[in-house]
Image (cartoon, rainbow, N blue to C red; front, side, top):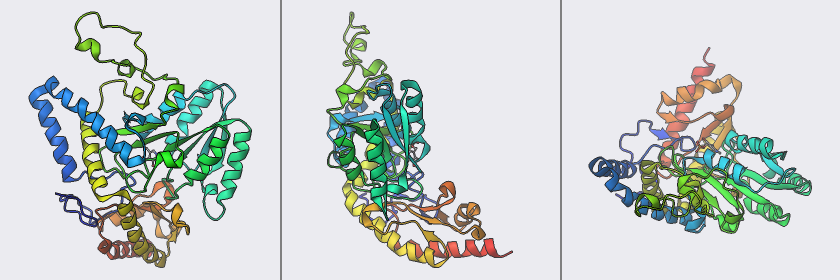
Length: 397
Ligand SMILES: Cc1ncc(COP(=O)(O)O)c(C=O)c1O
């Protein structure tokens, strides 16, 4: 059955009436469930006999993901999650002692911790800039600080395409233009953008990226990918390599005697991260969900989600919440977040809304609404009504 905007027929058992938690974990569609069930059945029936089918499908998925993010298939490596992709980039980047790395305040911790670890290991200097300083009203403020850091020897900036809490979309093109002028590199955590915000890594000047599949890509947890710009691949130091990171790493299992060696060259593209047995079910799920997203088109999905936000934002603002949505359309994303007055007991809001059929998140105290392609605009009144009741409950006593 094809995916249709604003139609949740492919999610027949989804309990919440308005599911606004795609920035956390998306529920699997029936298309994803069927694909996973078929793969599991195949392995159940054939064991090792099923392996080669999914080894080949890996290449199709690589091509699908490349098409989704404006990359070439050999620039995509399949990884367990975003975090492992950040760890890979932080550990394998060709650092020299004394180099700098720029991290942003406000980021999800996974885009900070590995850089801190790399700083300790390789003797790097950490530069910190507020993520919000790259956005309205004065995006130049962040860029000026970045320029200072680059002048002081920063060799890489780690930035999320979309900030997990505020939903602010970062000006990747301006960041990469400035960064490349100094010969430094741009790493992007794409998980809050990929699948809902149009991305073209080539055009945006991204050098390295990581993404997981359980949010806007609508796959399952435990499957993701990295992007390594082709020219950068050979410069990386593959410090996290394992048996399948070698060229022809599988050959010794199938090609007869005399092929067990430890000196095969390591791969120099993104697939060097695929060092061991991998999450076949998770990647089958991802391929199915990406198929649905590509059938709709990310631009179309983005417009649909913005129309949802356009309808929801004034209603929640009228109830006393403060929208964090940027006035500049280029800084918007799939996430619509609000500051909530203390009197509305923000920490109890998700539970009170869930009791009324609305699923939302509250990262670091902000109410986060994250609709995706299956959400119908007709849900908006239900969400506003549920919030009104939740506020009434909080302020009753
Ligand atoms: C911006 C951002 N990066 C990374 C993560 C974590 O990703 P993963 O669990 O795939 O490592 C999240 C949320 O869970 C996130 O919002």
